[in-house]
Length: 394
Figure 1: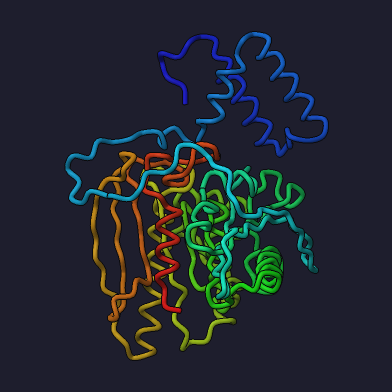
Figure 2: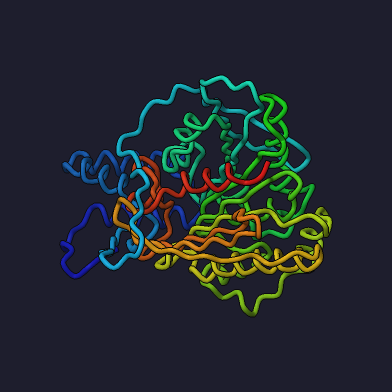
């Protein structure tokens, strides 16, 4: 993030370094004794006239600087005419309330968004899993999924990781106990889904799950362990199911070092147990930046390949034909170039969709600047996931 032309004294850089160091040590700067430290730093910066610069820095921050690189796209074959993300957050008319769910695995807070518009038919539901250091409110602001819920009438649920479960509020996708059906964090999220479905009368056949980074990895865990509950999975900058079994292997997987890492036996059993062989794999849509230095793009390629293998195995068992691929490339309204590949069945229904975001880092494509880890220049991942989910056969 620093370059040769940076000033010798950079208060924003020093502040960012302190915050990163505290986060790396697992210290929560929003509560307890460390909150006083943070407030002291902020008061000192305000006294020096640096508060405005800090606000701008935090508002524009992303995980890695490459996210802000917007390559020119005059050679793009397809012009993308989707609407650019809204630049100003708007007050939504629906209700956005906080709940708590508990079971034998513990308890988690969550927020549920219910559009104001009435619906006679049971509503679809999208479960949104935030990334590390994020919250439900932050993820809702960045993805703007509530705005899309107003347009399409579905429910949105935001489970929130507890700091007691992970100091950086990451979903523990890499822990063996959190990769199984009926236990750990998958059971908590599935329980939240059941609670919201019962309370709001959601359509049990139209429940989808999506996430960013660690949240995307957990979304894949849910798709593998609860294929009877989720009708589709959205993965943004995530990692394959079973690609890690502890923190060291998780860090290796994030850097693309998965080739020599065997999938633990317990995860293979967990994935196979709930799914009958005659059932098709859960449809999936994948987004990944090709300059993501936090979770290497090789992980997105692995996810797509494993989905293709699963569909191929199912097709061979069912006596059907394989999926047919079509690819296009283009440029989003915000300037980000992309490539999009769709794998569809013989009826023309998309089962796997993969987006490569050229020049993008580790951030939600087309997200709103009011949320953290967003890339406003990219195609709208939220809108594309909603389109993919809603087009799936009922």
